Image (cartoon, rainbow, N blue to C red; front, side, top):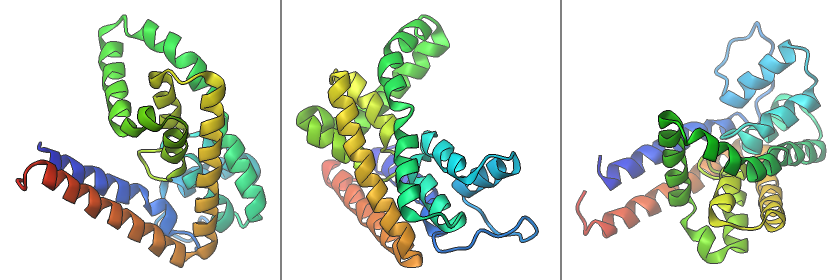
Length: 227
């Protein structure tokens, strides 16, 4: 698979994950009404069925990798009808909850598991992927890490930012501060998009499309115009 094909595939995956934005403005319907639900809403409904409160559900969803607060905030605002400011605070807190554990435990856990063949293959792949996605963090450190976390895309966020900070050797205190700043900015972006409803979904889709086109053109030029 060449570089252009990989880029298109990653963009396609990103667009699939971005479906979490497109239900903003939809009402949270009862179980008797069948409709297509995105990942965050399915998780929220499952949590409600298990008796978990809405605030706790938003916090729990925002702790999950990939989903994080970009899935939790639309759920809290559009699906649960919670006040936006409460959703924002809960989602940011939930998104930050696993970060110190990642920063502190990733080293010891990965060192132990890399003693085994399967563990070594997994962490070699994970660390290589993280380094590739966060190439600018090492160059700009504070600004790079903050912006990397702040852009609410599937390949970015607190989890990946924490792994990148660990790999770049950024001190714990600085990492926590930069990631928190990025999470807060991402929370503002997702809150605004969620409050805008379908307009927010359109904006998110337009940004993703622009990023996709820019990345594909850049890769095309890097390959000398060859696909």
